[in-house]
Amino acid sequence: MVKRKAIVHISECVACGCCIKVCPRNAISIPKGIYAEINRELCVGCGKCTKECPASIISLEVTES
Image (cartoon, helix red, strand yellow):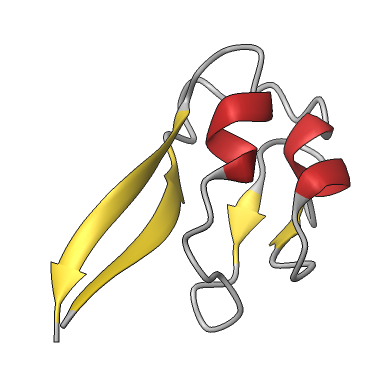
């Protein structure tokens, strides 16, 4: 079974918060105010955050389980 999870390239994230607004599972937060963090337990890999990110620094990681 293939699963997808979002991953933030933190060195490029400016913590704009656009991804937080579109996440249907509330899996994204900016706890330190520096970069977005994704809770991989809550992320369902829908890809909405990847499309919304203006800097295109969120991608989907494919894993097999």
